[in-house]
Image (cartoon, rainbow, N blue to C red; front, side, top):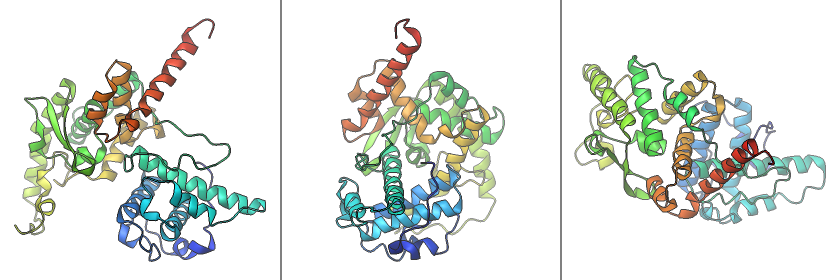
Length: 354
């Protein structure tokens, strides 16, 4: 969505004028007026605002307007607890704005609708929800977008972009290769520990959405990139981190997730800490810009490309569903539309009577 968002409506003006940090806001601090909004919804809004700032590079005023519109939805929508599986909370929120009787009201209504649609599209693309339930919201002049994918030469260029001999480049190459080889969500890749990876067996054990576990193959090229990173770079960063004082480790009685130390991670920062999502986004963006792919590419683009290329190569839809960790095959079926569109593009270019 390229249009500039204006200031929020009166019902959310206080949220819009509250001080806005350039960092990703914590769900608990998004606004005091979000009422009984589900924590998962607030987390999704926080992730989306971070995406707008880091990935899209939008101006603070524009992000503040998105923030205000989305918090208005979180705080004043009947049935908002069903936000992830029903369009009715979004419809109810927009209906309460009333029919726009003049061009100014129409513009506000369109802006809020566009903000909610874009937010839901992000959640669907990032697989925070299983269905883009807001895709049917009426917004004249806009159609539903299919996920962006790269063709094989573009993927090869992207994966070759990191510096081949610098420690950061070796790590980045391993991360990019794994994302494309196995179709992992970026959150899944960053949560991997060495115990989850079998270099000898050529697979990775992934804990996906809903704590669903799956085994995913890792191709030979990605395995070689991982072996180099794990052998040459990760131990050096861990050794350097061990020489620095660390905060006291959590007690044995702490929940299991909190007992995981930074060095448990496969993908580390240069300080020996688990690599963060924002750093991973920047890694992909840096590689994309260096080979002229620009803003088309995010970590999830490699997942989309993984699925699309498998289907184009004749893979069974159910197998692709299992590899991606989709709970419903209807989510996977979106990629059949992508392959159909690509077939039509090839036909249009190649057939003399197209």
